[in-house]
Image (cartoon, rainbow, N blue to C red; front, side):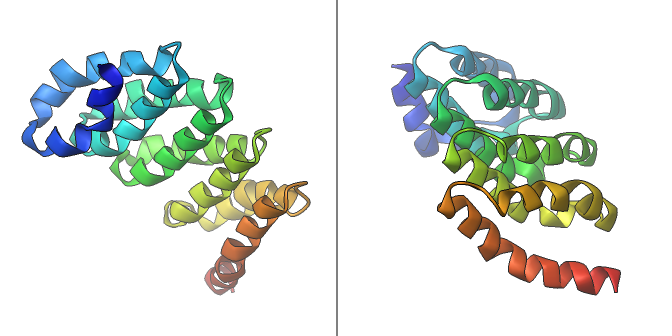
Amino acid sequence: MRIRLLQQMEQFIQYLNEPAVNSQIFPHVVHGFTDTNPAIREQTVKSMLLLAPKLNETNLNQELMRHFARLQARDEQGPIRCNTTVCLGKIASYLNAGTRQRVLISAFSRATKDPFPASRSAGVLGFAATHNYYSVMEIAARILPTLCAITVDPDKSVRDQLRNWTGSKIITFNLCTG
């Protein structure tokens, strides 16, 4: 039953107001992050794409980020770690500036070191999707060193993902600093 509701959330989310989502729905949905069934955990992560725009400051920037950090660092399922990283990149615009500053670089850097190749690619894509949130200093001191390690990744698809994105971004970076 729970998984069906999560899968069909797109059909009814527009009818739910923000107070109802925050007080009645989100507190129950977050139990899916700790469910023993990987399919429920994964669908719970995916449902955050729909719920994030309706979440209040506390639920989005504290509660959800706490669950995402735990899933990304400790979930035994590679696809769940990967989808958590992808989702974080997609909901970054809803996070407040302080949370983005505190969470994004750390989360995407962690993803680039994941044993699951798709998670490493998701880390690169996360940086790409959120590049406009970083200062030149953050790019130079924290992001580029992380991405340099990906240039020798054992998985060609991860290296290709980096190559596809960095070509245009390095040019932009040079224009910003020069």
